[in-house]
Length: 251
Ligand SMILES: [Zn+2]
Image 1 (cartoon, rainbow, N blue to C red):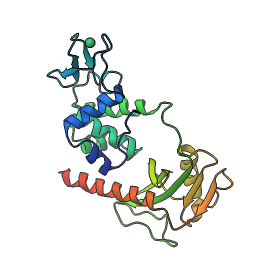
Image 2 (cartoon, protein in one colour):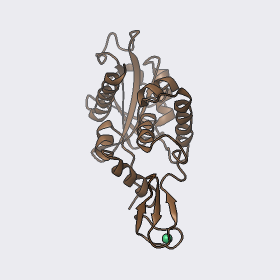
Image 3 (cartoon, rainbow, N blue to C red):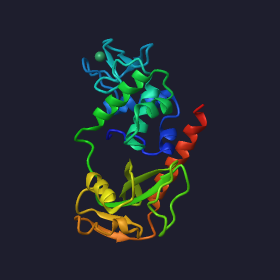
Image 4 (tube, rainbow, N blue to C red):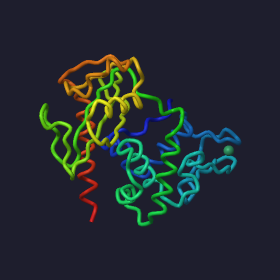
């Protein structure tokens, strides 16, 4: 079995990690894709130690950690919090401050939040994080207000809104990987910089008819202007739902 995917939407997250058991199962499968195998005796039977991050081989009593080799190892922060934090950092707001992160994860201690954010960001900068490719939908939206309309007014922000650009590549009919970034404006320079950073040259990029995307052919991409970019719209919709859910818990 392949290493399991980390959830990419809040719905996937809720479906994949409904309980602590499900979270631990995910960690086991990440470390041992074919199920636990004792490194010492190759036994496959185990039980959990009381801490629930250690499991013990039933035949030779070897203790193995499900968090070894991850940012969670030897951390006092509980695994469910780590997974939520990893979800936030991998899917949502690349420019998130440690203070925002602290509030959203619900941590009392700012130093802990800062350290977690730093560890997660460091862990994300690795070869596994490749650029999106193939067919990629790109769009931008305001968070904290209504979505921009077409034409006039587009790209003009309001003080209480944040402009976010997003990209999602497709695997068959389905959304695969997502990249999101808070941007200062929807200019051609800003959007092209985001696309160069996150999407492989030669990919086919689908956008609406906003002029900020008109230079993509010159930048080495195939460009399709279309009204049909449902996957990135769904990502934005999930993002807004998630932010509303978080806001409801912020005192
Ligand atoms: Zn063993």
